[in-house]
Amino acid sequence: MNVISNRTGFPVLLAVATLAASGSLSAQSNDPTIVVDGPVTQEMPVMVKGPDVKGIITARSGDKLKITTADGSATVISINEGTKIKTGGGLLSGKNKLTSNALLNGLPVTIKTWQSGAGLIASQITFRNNDLKTATMIRNGTAQQFEEQTAATEALRGRMGDIDKYNIKGTTNVYFDTGKYSLSPSAKQELCSTAASAEATDNALMLVVGYTDSVGDEEYNQTLSEKRASSVINYLQQACRWKPYRMLTPTGMAESDPLASNDTEEGKAQNRRVSVNILVSKGLDGL
Image 1 (tube, rainbow, N blue to C red):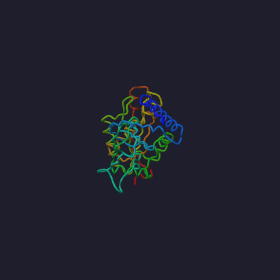
Image 2 (cartoon, rainbow, N blue to C red):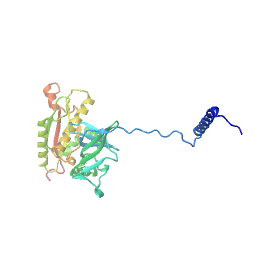
Image 3 (cartoon, helix red, strand yellow):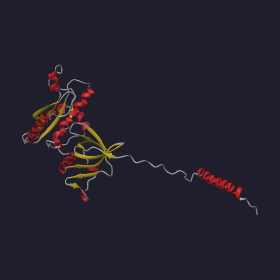
Image 4 (cartoon, rainbow, N blue to C red):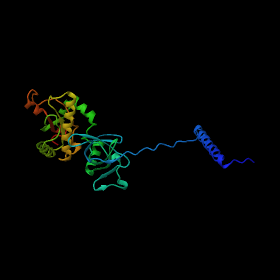
């Protein structure tokens, strides 16, 4: 039997153990059925409280909502499984529990959000029962339905002659500063007065059209006219309580159809407007 002294044996045994371990790891790394490295841990995104957003759902694509606020600006907010959807007096449960399918175009909502690197995520969405009923009526295609925004806008721009299907009962113009789309106090007062007048008119609908003066290029003015129309629509529905299903599709017409010459400052001021038209279908007028 061979004996290895303590002085020389410990390094030899350590070297043998090291070689054995090295060989074992080498065998594992060469064997495709054995995983040596574990999965990389993904860091969760940092979430902080985001702003509250109040406006109308104007578009939806999958889990993303486009919310247009009263000043005409648009915000994209994501929803997920953790988003709470509330209406009326509180969170619905049981057979009345709402899902994201209730988040329809035209629905006025208030949204609490979280901010992440990917943008805003809705933590809670609330709206009124009556507003949901109205949005559902529109979705289901009532007699006063309006089409998808883009298609209807293009159709209206290309076929303004369709206005001859209606009798115009009145027109109110509200005006804007250069490059602006926020409503003045006097404009807000006029809009609610117009809504009250329309409410007193049997079978009345509203058509809202935004315009600009000639300052700026065509693309800029088109966007500006649409923002002005959106500002008016939001105020009519949220502050003046005008029903969305009684609103024909709003549109922006840029510098088309000026009321006055764009050669003077006075004329430009008259052209920076949104026209709110009270209409009644010729087939229903007088009923």
